[in-house]
Image (cartoon, rainbow, N blue to C red; front, side):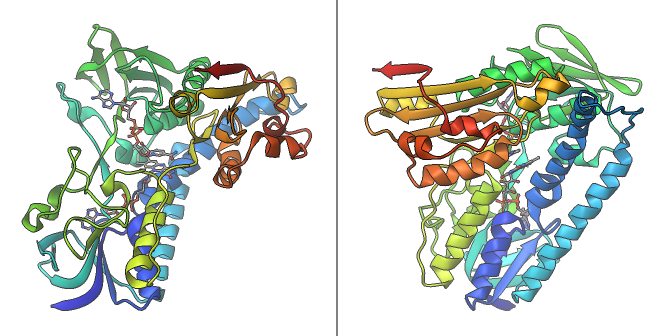
Amino acid sequence: MKNFDLIVIGGGSGGVRAARIAANHGASVALIEEYRLGGTCVIRGCVPKKLMVYASRFAHEFEDAKGYGWSIGETQFNWAQLKLKRDHEVARLEEVYRKNLLAAGVCIYQGHASFVDSKTILLSNNETLSGSHILIATGGTPVANDDYPNIEYTIDSNGFFDLDHLPKKVVIHGAGYIALEFACIFRLLGSTVDIIVRGDNILRGFDSDIQSQLKKELIQSGINFHFGKNIQSIARLNDQFLVTLDDDTKLDANCVLRAVGRIPNTQDLNLEKVGILLDSKGAITVNDYSQTNIEGIYAVGDVTNRVNLTPMAIREGHAFADTVFGKNPRLVNHSLVPTAVFTSPEVGVVGLTEEQALIQYPELDVYIAHFRPMKATLSGAQDKVLFKLLVDRATDKVLGFHSIGHDTGEMIQLLGIALQMKVTKKDLDATLAVHPTAAEEWVTFRTPTRQHNI
Ligand SMILES: Cc1cc2nc3c(=O)[nH]c(=O)nc-3n(C[C@H](O)[C@H](O)[C@H](O)COP(=O)(O)OP(=O)(O)OC[C@H]3O[C@@H](n4cnc5c(N)ncnc54)[C@H](O)[C@@H]3O)c2cc1C
Ligand SMILES: NC(=O)c1ccc[n+]([C@@H]2O[C@H](COP(=O)([O-])OP(=O)(O)OC[C@H]3O[C@@H](n4cnc5c(N)ncnc54)[C@H](O)[C@@H]3O)[C@@H](O)[C@H]2O)c1
């Protein structure tokens, strides 16, 4: 049996980073991946998704160009061609991951891993490895937490990336990141899109102005929402599906996408055998140093269900490796997380929502700018930009930036730095605007749109 200082289970964002950094610190490291190196983000998440987002947004660009004097001939979109190029790029990235791991001296094993005991891992080819430390970085999987007749006709986000052609009519269940990002991709590429939402709002947990503005924008883009509804059944009619909602609404579809959340991958690891504690959602319980209740066993990334984003998995993996193998104990800050939803228009947020801020900051100033971007003036596009700034009046401290509009994902990365540095409203006021940009609104707010005094 081969012996390692560290065995990493899962070659996604968190696992790969942890393995490389631990190896750089001098540890002997094995990494086990059952599918493809790069994990969800590279293979069937962030990366291929963003390429699809870029592809879809040309539809707007062609329309906008006409307002600027361009004559655009007939345009055509070829899904199969895009898929081929996208998959090629993903395969290239996978190889970059492999090369980087090998260059760091990590031994890569292909196969499913499960625990034999707290120091021993069994691979699906019956090989066993032993490790003085084990890191679980197995990520998450799309959930099927509903049950209705023929739910097996639905696809999830993994199935989306396997589609060979653009479906004409799409029904999407859910209203979170994945449902809305994929809805915009389909809609801009020409599908009709119906979204089934069990509640009355989208993007649970986001600031309410962001939720309502994005809802308006998406409805305007032609997406049909069915709020307060659930899927009751799906039937197959020749090569189409008939989706029946619980109020008996019937929708035809060529594709039904299930996007109602993800669950941590803790099922087939034999964790019970070792006694690793899970929470009520099946996520591995860890302390601030990503250590489980069992000595020598750690977990990072989506499998711990803390903040399920790639940069967080990477940060947790890196901090674990520095702490355990680099003699440099590092904690990860799970607050102040900048995030973008790559809908069209895009959402970029960081910090507290107005609802959250009011719990701690009774004297809250809310600045809102809602305007038509300059580019839309000649193109005639109906786009609107929403910027919202939250300031604690007592200290002048900025508490949150929330935005919808072109490139707000890019903007929010920089605003995240400002928030991390404890930016005040006075700092924003002292910053010279860049004109003409949309972003200048962040430094030219003068009068609060509303003031809370609780
Ligand atoms: C469609 C989609 C779009 C997304 N877009 C974004 C985005 O734009 N930005 C963002 O920040 N985040 C995005 N995310 C979230 C992001 O992908 C995850 O937060 C991130 O990948 C988590 O990394 P991880 O290392 O925890 O797990 P993963 O990347 O999921 O890696 C886990 C790996 O473990 C392997 N594995 C599991 N069990 C075993 C086992 N028993 N043995 C061996 N190997 C195993 C899996 O095959 C997988 O490769 C998206 C997710 C999805 C689904
Ligand atoms: N741009 C990004 O950074 C990005 C993109 C995609 C995914 N992600 C990450 O992946 C995670 C998973 O994405 P997701 O969209 O699957 O989850 P999500 O938690 O964002 O959304 C799940 C949606 O399903 C709904 N839902 C849950 N159970 C339901 C049920 N039984 N019936 C009907 N509706 C139900 C929820 O109300 C919500 O609207 C995200 O939370 C995020 O952390 C990030």
